[in-house]
Amino acid sequence: EAQVTQNPRYLITVTGKKLTVTCSQNMNHEYMSWYRQDPGLGLRQIYYSMNVEVTDKGDVPEGYKVSRKEKRNFPLILESPSPNQTSLYFCASSPRQNYGYTFGSGTRLTVV
Amino acid sequence: AQSVTQLDSHVSVSEGTPVLLRCNYSSSYSPSLFWYVQHPNKGLQLLLKYTSAATLVKGINGFEAEFKKSETSFHLTKPSAHMSDAAEYFCVVVLNTGGFKTIFGAGTRLFVKA
Image (cartoon, rainbow over all chains, first blue to last red; front, side, top):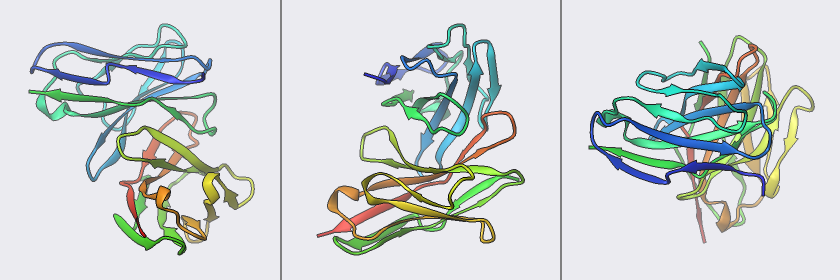
């Protein structure tokens, strides 16, 4: 089945403890992207990648890192999480720029 | 600056009546436009997209949208609402600047009354 898989689905962590949210797609898509969803704000783009080793900032990149060493994987790294990063995170992929995304099921992160 | 405005945060309709969810965008570039739906506690699903072909776009589940460049609008419609349409809907702009910058509207929650 064609899908975007995020792990974990739920995560509670403490301030300052480094964490990684994984994202993997099995559709050979070139484009991948991370979003955070907060009430009343819709989804905001954190980082995106147009291919292996090609990444760029979205609208809210502060406090996050990404890497794209393989086409299928696009992990989101929080080096020192803070409570304002408590949110619902989505990974998405697309075969090309104007095709539309396939979204993962989301990761609900709580930083205490 | 690029932006997407969904004009209603909440819309309530009765089952069997038409649905109209409004979206206006602002972009210096020729945009691609999308509508996504998110059911409670679910991920997002693509409803339809406009990418500079026909201005009236048909999507899944009976939804359609019309791109009006003069009004910078991309409103989503459905002739007859069904209870299963109750969800949150997002209007999205992808900027054709060579990158993959994507802007989401804040969302419109659709309620469908029996």
